[in-house]
Amino acid sequence: MKGQIAVVNDIHIELSKNAILDNTQSHFIRILDSIAKENIKNLIINGDLCKDEPSVQTYQWIKNTLDLYPFNYYVIAGNHDKTKMIDQCFPYKKALTIDVEFIETNGLYITFLDTSSSQINEEHLNLLNYHIENIENNGNEIIYIFMHHPILDFDFEIMEKKYQIKNKALIVSLLENYSQIQFKVFSGHYHIHSHKIKNNIENIICPPCFFPLDQKSNKVVYNPNGSGWTKLDIKKTGFNFQFIFIPSLA
Ligand SMILES: [Fe+2]
Figure 1 (cartoon, protein in one colour):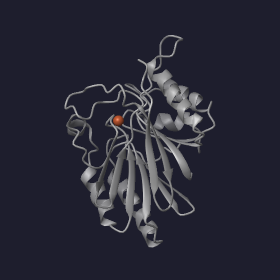
Figure 2 (cartoon, rainbow, N blue to C red):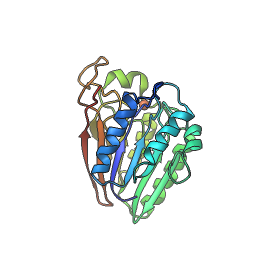
Figure 3 (cartoon, protein in one colour):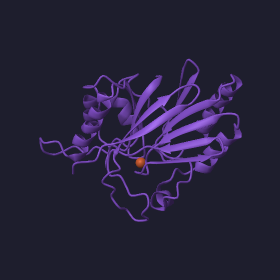
């Protein structure tokens, strides 16, 4: 996977009980149509595919919908997901749902982290550490990480107080130890779009598909213009990104 990538997160699909598609399904399709128009081939779904109770039927609907498009897609579990169900529904190579996955193509390093348990356990941190050490020894300067949960502080109290990743300080200090490497971390989860830099870590929160929030408010306030996807261009030397906003019709 190289070059242009579309990132979509927090789709929170809830299957309609009627034949007519409900808002979460039709809005997801609207976002996929927008990506397809840009002729982007790589797509990452960065967590929270389901809404309340994850179900095989919901994942199956998402897979069937994605398969209508010419995307090479990857699925990462969020806290509203069940990794086992994703594994069951998405065929091998269409979905990367294991806890720590590295892809290396022409010196470009991409990492996927499963944070469905709202934390990264010690074993996975050790594995992450091991891979970073190897990459550092090869003289590489940038590692891209896709994970559902943000790891820097975003001053968004309503989400950070209750729902932040549990061992975020541990992850941050692990990455900060490798000061020669820049970490570009793409997340979702807070239902806002934002961007923070701390030392060698840059953390981008990509806009959600479902229920964007007003980040200036300290209450849960719906932001009608905050839904969308992220257009990313990643290279060995750096990256560009653009948020594409697709207002929900409901
Ligand atoms: Fe989430």
